[in-house]
Amino acid sequence: MAMELHVLSERRLNSIGEWQRAIDAEYFPLQLAANLRFETLSGFVPVRLEGKTCGFECYHDDATVVMNDDGELNFGRSWTYALSFRIAGDFAELRAAWMAATAYAHATSGVVFDPQDDRLYDYKQAREAVREIERNWPVVEAAVQAAIRKIGAKS
Image (cartoon, rainbow, N blue to C red; front, side):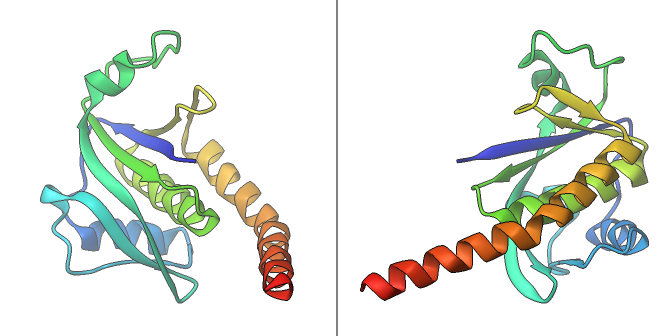
């Protein structure tokens, strides 16, 4: 199942290094690939989450299009920039994307838009969403490992 997140803001960060510093300031265990150019970011972004490789897709999208795709939600203002995240459905990717989006939103004084829930998150609410994902992570990881063992036992 593919998912999306969007960070809507009035300004952009200038570099991957600046974004990484925002992630580090949140104490998230996430490391962006340093060889990426932020201004041309378009496609898969490799990251390390707790030392393990994963990633998510990330794009500079048109904020007006992002906001117009949702006819019901009041965005509170007309945002200038949209940094969009696309996740293939892997839970590690979800964790990484929410961490990256939350740090980016905080650094740019923006908001996180979750179109699946049709909801805007300010920085504090996005940080709590990351905490909720983190609380659920051990249960999900254990369930995945149990399913893998079960499939392996049948082989």
